[in-house]
Image (cartoon, rainbow, N blue to C red; front, side):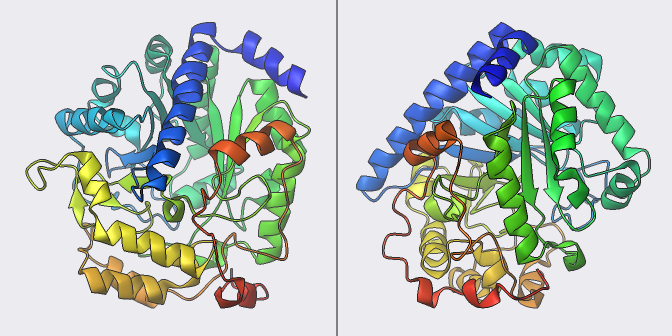
Length: 417
């Protein structure tokens, strides 16, 4: 499997892009995590990986979307984005996830990315706006990887994404990237209607197409229309985890996950401090689904260096402490009541345009997340397990965690989630 994956990387991707991935994302990413670990020893948190929503607008209307895609377009100004990247680089950061809305609807997206040749950007997109010309531009940049979402068959994609002809346009975007040898990934928000994509045949198809990595993440019922009927059951979540572990040891394709360490223990990236989110208006949030913010990257609202905004944020600090003392999974799903109390304590403003995030949080039912202490599945792939041991784990955040006080075990038989 290792040799087949290496052969694919060497012969199916532009060598220059592969070098950018290895250096900007690989070597520099490791250095960034090591600096993060050293800061933790002094009680300081600055996430080595930042996710930035550069726009709220989108051409689709996906079920359960928590982004204000129908509101007036808010596109992050280049000067705000550039300053954020430079100040993050001061802390050793080089990786940025670019999300939305639909990032390719940002009228100046390439203007955001092009100056930062020493960074690596992963753009989360539906692929509809990736033309051959844009794919060629991505190849010239070399340090951008599109992660293109596929949500099922033609019928399921149209239903999940609120428009017709969705899958065809998405596949055209994927094809444009692959024809130009862009390092490309495909992701799926796994829910009740697209579980059929969790199979070897789908992975084999992606491999045959030339896709280099994939990401199966679990659907989370958030926003004004959370569509909880789409949620996976606890048993289905375990099946998905088992599938990912088995395929990592078998298929020549990189499979990402963000919610488990190498031993199969659940974790929350926001609780560990390894990642936080910045919304299109500049608000700093614990993660994309926690739409409350006390700090902003915009200078007209907060003139401090980005370092100080993270280090001095009582809201973010208290969120991390609450999340990691409550569960190894997702506190938003398992204990929305505690999160609501935290928001009230800090009087954290609703960061949405719709202004209903507080009411949505109050109306949420307790559900299970990835935390399942009776069903931990360690990595079988040696390299994944080794890499996670050093560069993607809980970094001691859950030291002394009391499983008996956690809410998830009692919910494992809750068939609603």
